Image (cartoon, rainbow, N blue to C red; front, side):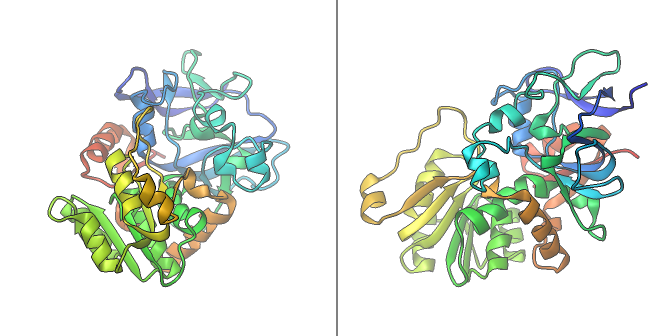
Length: 370
């Protein structure tokens, strides 16, 4: 008999999540079975639920899982049963981007993370009656008590860290922090602006503080988010409903910021992020926009001031390097991402989704029943 477990299944565009019984199918030699302790909820789960990104339904979503390894395939060497792990995105490991040390820019990213199946078309789980369920979301589908993941997207972490907290390091927190560390390469003494005060934007704020940026500006329209930004490292906050954000940024930085990051995906704010830069500054786009969205950029400003606008996925991170480092920073008190989260039991996953979309909760984490 295959192992059965509870999973949150999406069966129609827009949801809701339905708690159902699923079963594990055969595990491959390069895969492992993980007992999920908790899983962060991310904006990407919502756009997959709503099929803004056209993932197939019915599907088990969830891509910020943390848990304990229960069993490993014959070819798995990096972890053993009992190890604590964080699950992250899956890459192909054979394209040029992967070979060059940029697995987050994998040329086959969508195939491995959004197709709802293994590359060969098979599935790791099924419904209780044996019906097909789409899975493999980010190589994990971790809105469930149990998951089958690949060795490449499983990161071993220290056992003294709070395992139920760590899942968001696999995507949202990694995206904001990794963009600061890896893609923008924010330098000590520099200035950094985060457009958007959600979990990704505030992760960028914490990372900029940890790396030694001395002017860190958070821009949002929600006062509670701006207050939190000040608590976790922002030196300045701007409510763009109440004042001209561009004028204020240029005033604070005496001519523009060295670095900016937009996590909103709103075209007008992406354009503002470029205008907020000083000459030779760099802005990163990390938020998901609707397919086909366009941005109007002042090209003379971009060219004459030698500015750069870059797109970044998953913080351009090597997760096996970044995630343990973020855990260490957190345990040292230098990366307080626990201030962003709120926990929900699995049977309240729809409440978590609603609270996330309303902005009531920055980073929901779904705890699995034992």
